[in-house]
Image (cartoon, rainbow, N blue to C red):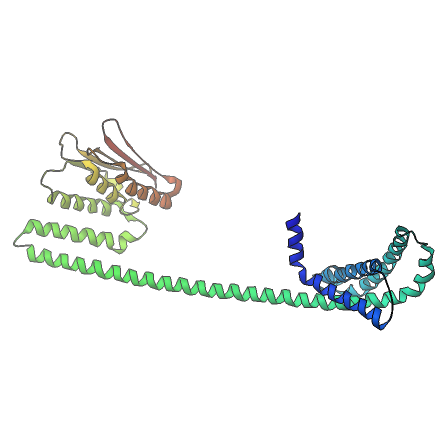
Length: 359
């Protein structure tokens, strides 16, 4: 309650100060210029009605007529002011009678003198309505200025945001150009090394060529597009496995199978590459009795990609999570509820993954 009162006083402190100065001025003027004496209760009673009329005129009558969207209300403010004056005279008359009764005075004196004083009251209320009208237009102009300032501020913020987006776009374009220059340079170097080693070291040359093809595909426009044919992904995996085997001392045992119908199926790129990298990084592939497997099958509009491999001892699940989460997020973004991705480690330490997509 106390905080509410303090907030109210703080919000309207200039109103209180202005009325205090005005009432003090009129009290001194009446006493020393007009030589009229009145007690404090009379001033409180009189100015209560003046202040009430002042704010009612500005915040209610003028606000809801001049700012109305209806033409009838906008044109009715003059007759409403006349009604407002009449209401003020009547209300003050009856309140004055009640005031005399509360003070124990003879209220019949009100009937005797009020008919003479009501002309002065009309002049005084019109006087305060004039101030109230000026106050209304001052506040209206201030509100409009604030609206204009807010609109200008929002426009300025929009311009700043637009320039920020343009700058970010330029930076990204520059970064994209840099990313294009470096891979192209590397691919050209790999091609050069391939030709230089083709006669002296043909196996190394084939590995260099495979690496060049893998990078060219992974960094090219096709892989950066939305979908690619699974045939291209399968070719990429076969080259990748061939390159992996070439640098291994021991044979890696991995069964890779797919049906013919799956070759032309459009699919998001580099998903299978992530699965293969996880298998090679975390799997045990050197036991011919426990080979890893990759099966791709397309049948009845359902694409299935299934992998299984024995986990290496000491492999932590954290290593899987980044790549597997990336797969799940990309499938959800591309296919929504039409795709599912499940994986688990069984009791024999075989890690299984299963992707199913309704094409």
